Length: 337
Image (tube, rainbow, N blue to C red; front, side):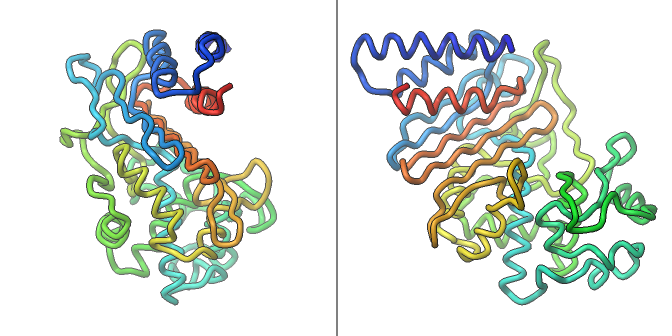
């Protein structure tokens, strides 16, 4: 609540001076808003704002790691949390369009050694988070092999597939495993070779390590740095420009058709998530596309409003759970309050 209040006060002051000067929303106003957030300890990261189809602001604010000696630049890659699930969702639809599987195929077709529940869960269920699979046990799972053991031990699903909704990473895990099984490639290789290159992403990496010199390291408010770790594999990390290119490839249907895009952009109901987060389409045009993600102390936000030619991207390596507050503040400035 205090974080929201401080951001709101900053936003109100910017709006007051903008109206007093009778000037339109500008790069400097957005910059001031974000710099104030940084001074208040509420934002450390990179931002890209495109308005009217043109870059309004591309800026780095703060540090690349906990040492406070390395200054961020736009070239740094970030973990983007759940936004990385877009890559497995698009990969599945690529394979569907190639006739390698259908959305109604059951998991048992590809993984015959899984328990009985594999006969009930369809690919569609995985895509819509309606499989009934429980969440990954983050207390014990440290690798894909650990998670496979847990899956093999499941005797009963949390609900009948298709009857309810539960957003969790076992759906994501199985989507990535399907891509590997069907393509015969490691998920990392499939994404990097068959998707990132075609979409024009030059710096994206799946599952980078601490040795990656251009990976921003996450840290807490006391500047204690996190150890880079993930219970399951398959997490694509990108910089500002590459996330913008990825968003543009979704808009342009570079990798998959409008029909496939609509399926993974439209959730099964209100307050739900789809493979691309959530959004809207009108015929063959993406109107909006909104997705956020978090991992360790990384947090990311992608907000697309194509009617305004607007894209807002925020990447932080010092999470404060205020990414939507920041994004909505930027929107308010762009909308001239």
